[in-house]
Image 1 (cartoon, rainbow, N blue to C red):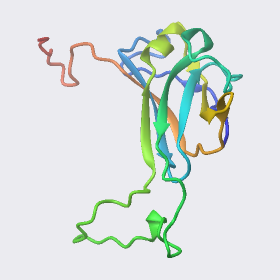
Image 2 (cartoon, rainbow, N blue to C red):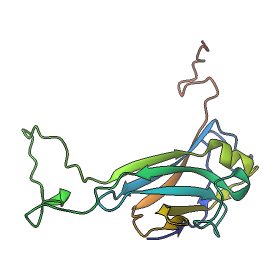
Image 3 (cartoon, helix red, strand yellow):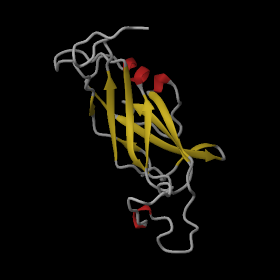
Length: 169
């Protein structure tokens, strides 16, 4: 895919009621099953900026939240049909090999400050602009592939789930 814009994602904070403004200590966007078998690229992430493109500045005012980089495999040069297919590899309980190098990746972008800049919101859209270097600046690429993105927020208030207060060091 080229530029991706998510449907609105709910900003849900553990331990906060539905009528309260979300207060969180950390917020992450988690991209699942990111393909890295193709070319290398940088995925620029923007919040509530569905119009973002390759020429959009990477500034807070433009909604920029962070990025992740894929150092791509660059295609398959193997000699057999399934050389670059991780699903074709047979694995059993005694297999000591490392996992197939082309298994999809999980990428995490910490967006705490960018989400806070939006103020007390309950929903946010995510726009991902995959770019590669070009002769006259960044160019959008179609190398971005992933199965899902989710927004995870974390709250640490000094209490554990069992009600025992945690000491600060």
